[in-house]
Image (cartoon, rainbow, N blue to C red; front, side, top):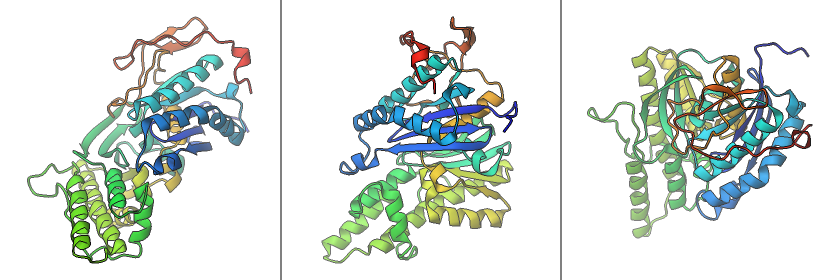
Length: 385
């Protein structure tokens, strides 16, 4: 099938936490989404252990890339670019992905794009529902982030309206699940138990919803503490803890605040579309309440299917493909991971220059650090498939 000039073929690598994700995208079409998760290795610790995650990425990287290329039915030589999450995330985990992307891009003579993890979570919706409206309002909720973002241009202009001031929503799910002895990760198991519970059984607090509170910021630390104290009081009194009701009531408090603030942001900014992304966007109650509140407000809701909400390489490839299509500058060979890369920096570009192999690539950037350039490699021996 003939390719269109405006449909770049891009491979994306995601290693910001415990998922080794490799996606391949042609324009807005998803060709492959290969994921190797190390979540089971972290479960016994009750949370993600950075060193364990980094080692798992090292072991999974090459097989996952090969699996993605096979699934997409393309050769690495056919790629128009390599995109990789440069931040934010766990520093060691990010470095594995960035190092791999640099090696593949250099060996193949392809441009390299270091992109922002949060912006990627927004851009992935293009693979499900087509081009993003401009501007797009995005609610991103995950284990590390709870953010309201306005994106007039996903490749160059993402503006933070609000974020969590303490625990992120996904982090609160994990901690409440731990108190309930439900295991890790907490999001899916609480969602499951909540379906059998009464969301109105316990009135847990809604953080930062007072008249003097920041209207777009989030706080879930107080809610998490309130749930823990309620459970402790029950156990101290020798009473059984109604796990399903606690799960449902806690979940309702989180979802109520998230959707209320997101819809308000849309109204205040005059935006008629809301996109929800991140791992918590897979929560069934969040989807249902957001749908109802958006319909009542005349707002179109866009939520990717659950597999595209959690961390994956497809979202990185989607943003990389958009960077190529819009002619954004590629990253330099001294691209490095930035664990606190701000969302306002959707990618890490530089000034184009010739690296000596005839391929123009970007040079330095304020977030790029002085690292040795990639060693000279024998390209004919590296992944010519």
